[in-house]
Picture 1 (cartoon, rainbow, N blue to C red):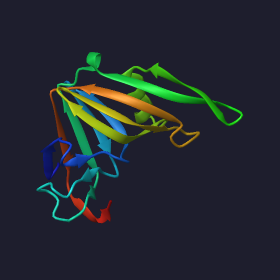
Picture 2 (tube, rainbow, N blue to C red; picture 1 turned 30 degrees about the vertical axis):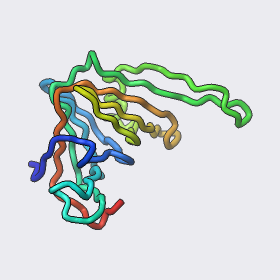
Picture 3 (cartoon, rainbow, N blue to C red; picture 1 turned 90 degrees about the vertical axis):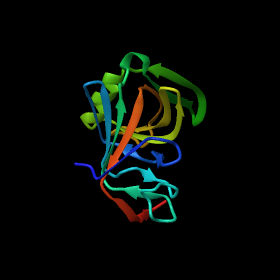
Picture 4 (spheres, one colour; picture 1 turned 45 degrees about the vertical axis):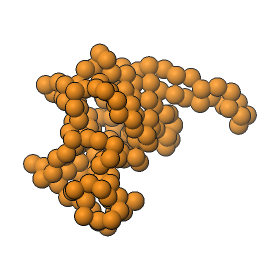
Length: 159
């Protein structure tokens, strides 16, 4: 089904400003689908443009996903008379997050990503039916490897 696949590294793929539209867990693999694609950086062998460009519909798989070692936190800012009082952090079960994404209650947009040994840390925002970036999130995914899939680069969608 996919023409291109690459192992995820910070040097070739970026999820900055990308929105995950659906999530699936099957046989120890966590899959995130991106209807509007993700970014392929100019130094990738799959990118013939001299700029960072978007792909068409794409998918990222976290292979040997360990749900028990993975975490998801929500951050909510609280205001009184327009002045921020505090920010609260709440841990949310991943299954609950994935259900909200799949049923359309939430869209998660990635902002920053950091890769470590068997772990990837993401920061971003959650858009609800009420408001864009109503909540911010921190997600840690524990896995053995990450694979990225897409069919075509879209030269008309430069960064």
